[in-house]
Image (cartoon, rainbow, N blue to C red; front, side, top):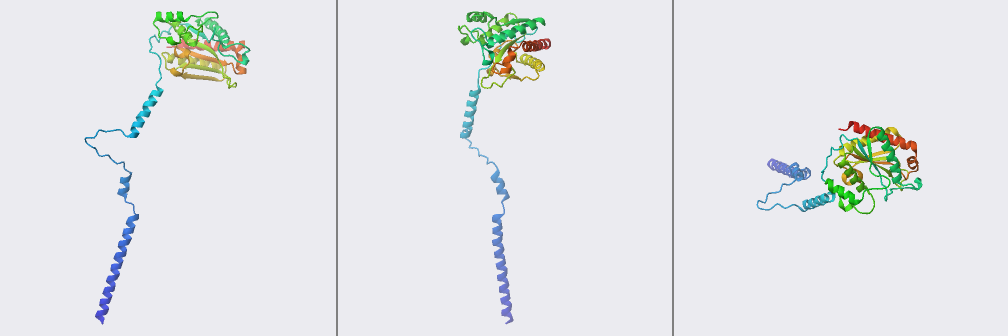
Length: 316
């Protein structure tokens, strides 16, 4: 009886141990399913390395081909003609005391006007103010040269002949026999004057207009940052900005250096330091009134003459 009881206890113990071992195995397997495999996770985040094919020719992917095509298209889109090759002496202006004054517009090109100018056009205002500036420069010992007078201008044939004589670059497609001394022709003729007897600089006087925004007023200065005389043009413009700010501290003053392709003709085609001065807005009632005011004109041209004097005295 004791033997039977002892055997029963041994069998029960064995069954208990077997059950515990079986349950532990199941639990271990379950935990293995929820514990992350660190090595597998690391491999999943790595960029796979392509195996070399040995004799296969490498071909760009579709994405790479599209990217290259887009880049080529963008390059073609922004490729614009730049400044002509410099064939002139960029230092010819040094030492000269001649100042070329361009009274904007004129003749068959009257320029802008507005209801506030009482029938007067830009060309008349620029000529009157340019003449006053010439007087002030003469008083300072300079030799002003007016790019245009009041009754005549060179014909296209005369301009072409001078250009050929001096071996100058020109855009023949815009030299038209239309009895208009336009901006390009005036600038080209200014270069002819400069080649024959160098000038220190050219200052082009204009009147601005913005009919859709009559509240805009003040002076705007422009020069070209990437033509042959970019550095002295920037220096000249800075002197003008400083003098005008001193003379008219409460007036809006905007200065901008433009790249060649976006620049105004009278600054990008010049062979000497040059600046375009948009003196005031014809479309603003306060500015339009100033354009006729003798005191304002005197003060404005004095500031320009002082700026030119300072620039020439300090130029390199």
